[in-house]
Length: 331
Image (cartoon, rainbow, N blue to C red; front, side, top):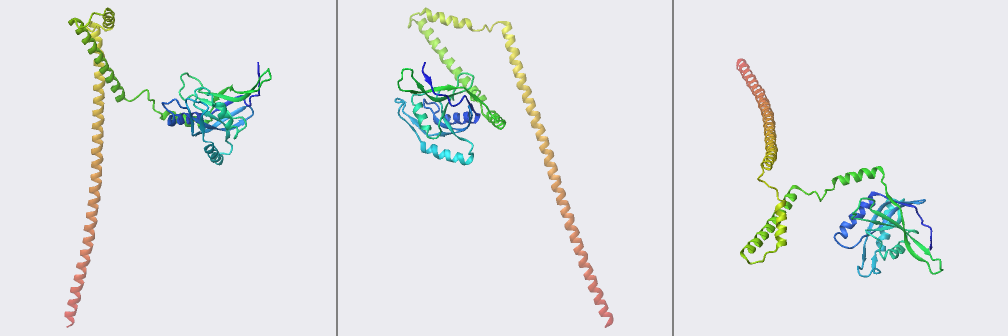
């Protein structure tokens, strides 16, 4: 068995932020295609544990027919790495990721490129469309296999265990984020009704085809195919017998229950609407009463001011008359 060089780490710990960033990168760039996305991993190496705490996307292109032809913008990698250092100097470039879902022939060459920035880059393959329940990551380190026969060493990837861990702040953030994500599989009521309508239209088209076929067989246009007739008979045997009294009664009971729910809902909506109408009228009456009260106070104030002004004028007139009378007496 050939010997191998030592693996630089024992466990790779991936934070949820890295997974969310990788999935978002894939959905933006390569969704509904066979392409994969590539990005850089940031974090710390503590002994045998590699802590992957952050990541960023990288422009990447490759030839689908020739795996050896690929392009990765290393200038962009260096520029982004410098900016991340200014934000958090503790997070260093420790490896790279891609959306896989498996190892590719060009991964060793890309890994050699990342050795410019870190001695032992870790490769984390993030399965953006997992089919099974489990950890959607696979971590690898590049090692050299030393052959027993003395031939040249070869490079290969060795799988190392990976796990998902999050700090308390990350758990709260991810929980709120997942709570806001809508489940596209559920859909809205209008979507479900539209799907049912399409299904019923498809059923109608199939029934019309069966009717046309049977009509042509009866008319002698088409020969009798016993296999088709047997299949149609099996379909008709699966149909429920709606003429049974118990079936009719059960159907009526269920229909009445549903109609009762609809009726109660209508009553509740009507009561709530009346309640809101009464509240609005009360609020309007209060607002009008307050406005009328302000107007009455304003009118009373104006009347008082007019009365005071009139008294002053009358007093001035009387004083003028008294002065004139005194002048006449002196004369």
